[in-house]
Amino acid sequence: MVLDLIVTKTDDGCSAEIPSIKGCESWAHNEDDAIEKNLELFRFYIKEGKDFKIKIDRARKEGNKIVYKIIFDKQI
Image 1 (cartoon, rainbow, N blue to C red):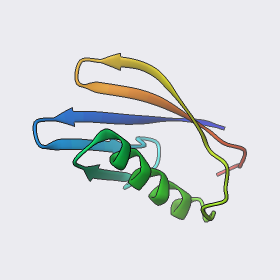
Image 2: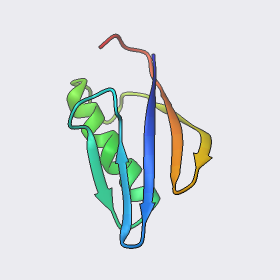
Image 3: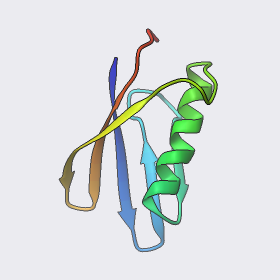
Image 4: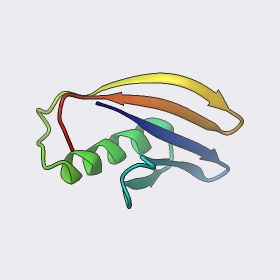
């Protein structure tokens, strides 16, 4: 399955969200931490542990937003 992960950079940090999963969003001071926090929350939502394999590919940049593709093998 493939989902979008959108990282928005602002003056005070970065927010990351998976729009297709309500409430799956996080904030951090830098992009990498925002992505890690969001993936941790995502694993919680799909009821998987840290060993669950997720691949992340950077897809495109639109202004202050960066779109990543989350690729994983599970039906939600």
